[in-house]
Amino acid sequence: MFATLSDKLDLVFKKLRGQAVMTEDNVKEALREVRLALLEADVNFKVVKDFIERVRGRAVGTEVLQSLAPGQQVIKIVHDELVELMGGAEDNSLDLAAKPPVAIMMVGLQGAGKTTSCGKLARFLKNQRKKTLLVPADVYRPAAIEQLKVLGRQLDVEVFDSSADQKPLDICRNATRYAALNGIDVVIYDTAGRHQIDDYLMEELEGIRDELAPREILFVADAMTGQEAVNVAGGFNDRLGITGVVLTKLDGDAKGGAALSIKAVTGKPVKFVGLGEKLDALDVFHADRLVSRILGMGDVLTLIEKAQASFDQQEGERLQQKLKKNQFDLEDFRAQLQQIKKMGSLESIMGLIPGMGKMMRQMQGAQPSEKELKRIEAIIDSMTAKERANHTIINGSRRLRIAKGSGTSVQEVNQLLKRFTEAQKVVKQLQKMGPKGLMKGMKG
Ligand code: GDP
Image (cartoon, rainbow, N blue to C red; front, side, top):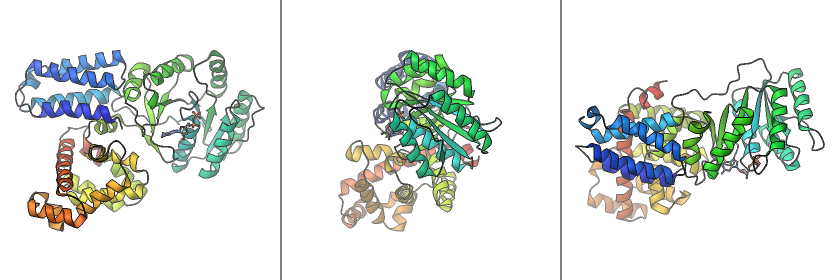
């Protein structure tokens, strides 16, 4: 996710980390590079300007420059301000506190992933034991009605029976009545899209909004379209007053601009992110976790949650304990790889492990593959338990043995060890990140 931006910021931070003494000029130089990285990632120009101003304001104080680790402090400020930019610690949960049936209206351009997100959301709500009804109200694209019916069948979630010859407003009205009579908790309305904003569509959506008085109007934005997604979000917000954003296709090679600008520009929070075509590829959005991933610090919290939710609670707890004691070792690294295999979509999980996303990119380009994962596992498997617990004992002859045992080269073993030590550092750093940091989240 956001590979180029991550790599660029990583370079800036590397320089900052190394600096024991810092001047205002050093900070300016670093911020100039951060600014370029953000602009290249297609972040809105004004958003970047304000952001850099805020960081500069905080970073050039004598308190920071004369502290024991000024570089680290500046990194922390960039981190915190990025989190703030994307909505901070705001509660992004759905507002379902109303008399059922509660209405969620999904809006957005064609191809953004609206229908798919309806399905994902239905699955999400079903897991929370909400009785959910899906309502296809996109009569201009009959395939969308069929698509939603197929999703409903896969999920075992009811889909309201509508057809392309009905009026969208009538469908919504009938569906609402049906939901009230049938004890439905939440109704998700899949509305029509267009290739671009047009007046006629907006009028239709306004009519539906006035009829439904939805608790949530979620704008579905394709992250791959960058600034365009942000502009369109603004347009929908002006006409409809959206309540939040579902940002899709973050699993692709989106540059990050949409994710980083949309809250600042529209004032509306990202509530969910889509990370793949499958129905389970939807995450609740947490600004701090996304920033940690962009900054290569991994997203240990989401990883722990996934590990706990999907199957192996013991593994999640064991990992928590080890992280608390600062004992993240190669054994954990491998255990996580094995978890990943079980968790399904490799791409969506890779970025969660500290240092891992970058390691994969460096080993074979942008897309991590099962093959690479196997190779890393083979290397760790060829180590003794002692070596896994304490990698510092792995000297030259041990490296050769490990390379031979795993059918790899000493170079590859070296690379893995280097990345692992970086990951270890990141884990340590995460723990030091103050009250909002990792430890609090893990206890909560
Ligand atoms: P709609 O026209 O807005 O209803 O869009 P669809 O739901 O039909 O989605 C358009 C395409 O985007 C489909 O091929 C989906 O599988 C794909 N898609 C939707 N969400 C995601 C996502 O989060 N990641 C990826 N990679 N593809 C997605």
